[in-house]
Length: 431
Figure (tube, rainbow, N blue to C red):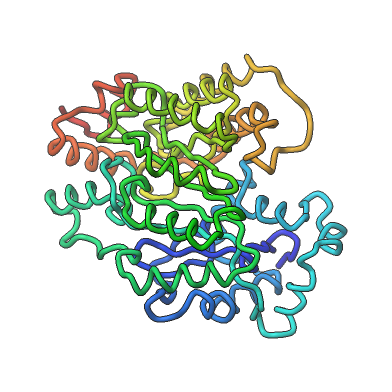
């Protein structure tokens, strides 16, 4: 065990609620179906955070490596900034000078309190990841029914699932009131990040923003949210403008028609038009901007288009982690010869950029470091493709999935990605 390697302060100020209303201890944690956490209908947010999460904090203080933390470990292995590194930064601790910076952290007394009280804490969560359910007008190829109502309907139609996911927790007024009451009681509440679904068409997003404004919390809260760039809601924009700060995430896989195939339901012309509109609003109000990506073995072929655009615009690029599920869409499913071609494309763009020296950019939201951050993210995917073990045995599963989806959607990946014809046909693709 290594305290310095495995410790993360996140469980002392951050937590998450998923689409069904069950709690999760971290926005980056790998979800394990064998590990069930309680829901907001059974346990109040305060009880969950202060007491039910005690074993997580206790394990952290003992230097244990939590199974749910594996994705952060993979990110750090390949030079991608992990959630753990970002959370350490928030308490003033750096990996390079861990021991000394930990002793001077203002959170040290909170860690000691938990050490002396079997992992309990007297803190309330200041940083929330809030999953508002699966209201969504897109059906991304790599998504899940829990995150897209449109995909859920499609999966049910073709027989991938027998029933639709349950309604979102925030559709229940009592659960929503319990959540809002906790926010009002949290004196140091700082950050709320909303995901879906598509947040702009989710009823609870508008309700929560309005309630926070009414309770006069907006002036001290930063709102983070992600939009899929398929719709616009001026009323939501006006509500967001009343908050202390906004972190805007715009989901896109590549600036190429392949994005339409990957993010089914979107159109690249609309995506680019709305992206330009959001960038204009964000710059007018000094919001922070990021392009949010989920590279798969398909979209990674044109990933360089995102980095080029982001660099020109001075915008950061972020993926929550290296894709884990669905396993057959991981970039590591690419055989070596195709990996080498993607690596060459990414390196060509990296080499064309002015290389700046310095420590890795941990605060990926700082616009002053956007250019360096984009280069570092591109380098992390190069390292991943170079070193991650081969999983090309998953290609037949990918092909089976694509053909089932395409039979329903009446499209073909080869119309968007002809470069992969030999690869896909070798794994049984027929069209």
